[in-house]
Image 1 (tube, rainbow, N blue to C red):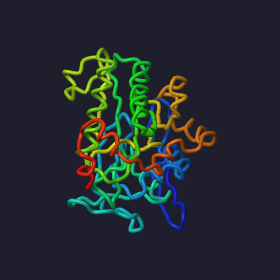
Image 2 (cartoon, rainbow, N blue to C red; image 1 turned 180 degrees about the vertical axis):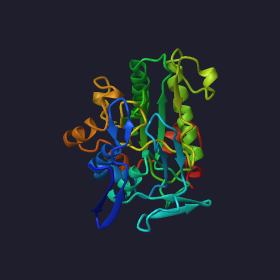
Image 3 (tube, helix red, strand yellow; image 1 turned 90 degrees about the horizontal axis):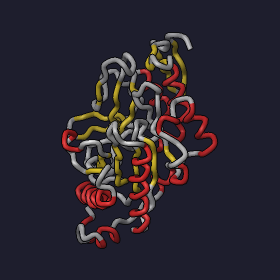
Length: 304
């Protein structure tokens, strides 16, 4: 690709600039490579972004330069990109490949959608657990903790889905009916995370303070808050290797590592596996049974 060009896509006209700018110095990947990646995965990525308020992290000078989170849509946003205004902030909604291309052209490497849709902002579609290791933890320990969650969720007949964080950790998603408050979902996450800590007290914790965690994996259930976000499946991460947050099957968790998936390998993998996270979108599970069994709240009172 040349440094600057105008392209037509899906009936939209976009002017792309600084296409040769290096965003990942270690591997020589450019803005053109970022755009090409998001085009390649757009058909599986967009369903995970559709109808969700988006927060993006922009790296205009690459992953080694300064970055900033952006919630409010910029003034120069094209008219054809849909937005949703909430609490004074005008959020972007991603509905087409051209929007992904426009965002990537702005240096938006990371894409962080809300856990709830614009039509049900107070009720998340997932319970999520972010397994965030310290530098002293091994990936084997992260896997052990993740599998403990899987066993626990299976016992409550809750289907769960797994993805790499794109960093050193793993993300667990439990798709649910959008009927429960963030407070109820968060409390369920806390109780389950506490149960896993009881199994592995030597290397897991729910201690929020970084200083007090020590060399342990933080089982972060506190992501279950309205307005908090986690990187989307297939979102690129600002790591030196241009890694991607990539869905996994539970069966392969021992055979792969988060660093195996980047902007080159992930599109190739998708051709073989399809979207392993599709079930997150079309599985709507009730929490009534598990809430009752764990004594968290009366199910009749848990729904909004």
